[in-house]
Length: 336
Image (cartoon, rainbow, N blue to C red):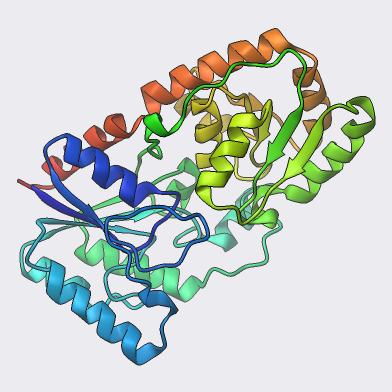
């Protein structure tokens, strides 16, 4: 089986999945055309998305010509094919008998109007919308017509793509060496990609409230940090605060748990059956300060959460575990 993961590098998922699939005997390749401050490492990374229209689309067409005959499965991330954003090449893969998987990660398909109408708090609650509803509708319409399967990375997206299945994000565990827990905490970390989506202003308020009580603790917010540097800072922290709106934990929580660091996030009650034995510390914008204070004062609990977090990631997010689930999906849709 020959699989292409393309064309958007989101939380390292295309490159991680391709790497793990290769270990399982699949001829997999990752390709990204989008620039990213995170500095992930796909197998092929032509920076086409930054070019002006004519060279950009010529580059896209060149990628189609290069890869169309090389792969049996085209696993597309973030609602984009090799000629984004209009995905003109999508019918071609189906015509040639290729298997097509669409893998959604967030604002590529999240229905903002629905989330605002049905939830008091959600990813979209305070976000200044940069999603494009018409494009989202077209992505989903074309996926229904051409794709053999659809995947979402977080369960809230199932409300926007009911026919999809949720598959956890994958972590390459050799990149994360668990760190010992300090008796006296020194660093609390929050690393938003988008402040409004993560509820960062409420995290800042909780940090300000706690600073007088913990003069020896640094409450740090880091943004637009390359992944290698962010990983180092996560390993140094004592507690990681993720998000207060989405209702599920993000890739950064997975990374914190892989480093044996307690992670905190808001979790929706209806998602709890999907998070059995998940040691993410449940919190909210109203309770974050108190929840974080209690955790900072309890080294044995931090240690226990760190151990449980690492075990949970090994069981539910390890790259080869997720790659096997994806491989099973490929077989289900008839890939050989």
